[in-house]
Length: 101
Image 1 (cartoon, helix red, strand yellow):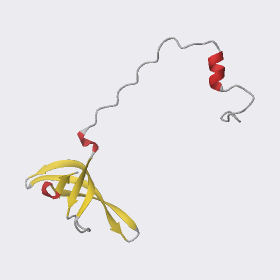
Image 2: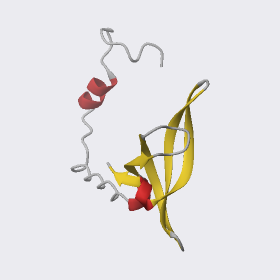
Image 3: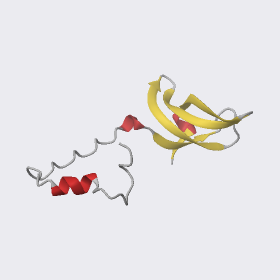
Image 4: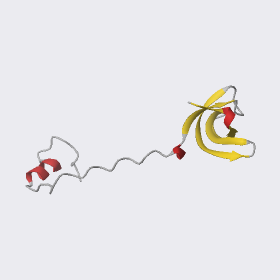
């Protein structure tokens, strides 16, 4: 619609025309639905201690857990410096290498 988004025109806006039409809503608008509850699988921030390719501890995003015969492991996404900028890495770590942020 040409020129319909600009204020200051000589014609009334769409909102003004709707208000002047005499048509009113039948009743109050329904309440919006509440947001869905956060699922545990949505990811959690964590510290990753001594991941390969970095020195020390880096921030990561814990994506999921799994249990193995040797213990619990967390799948984590984290960034490491690369030759052309940061590189995103995804890997499984023993639970002892992860710390809640």
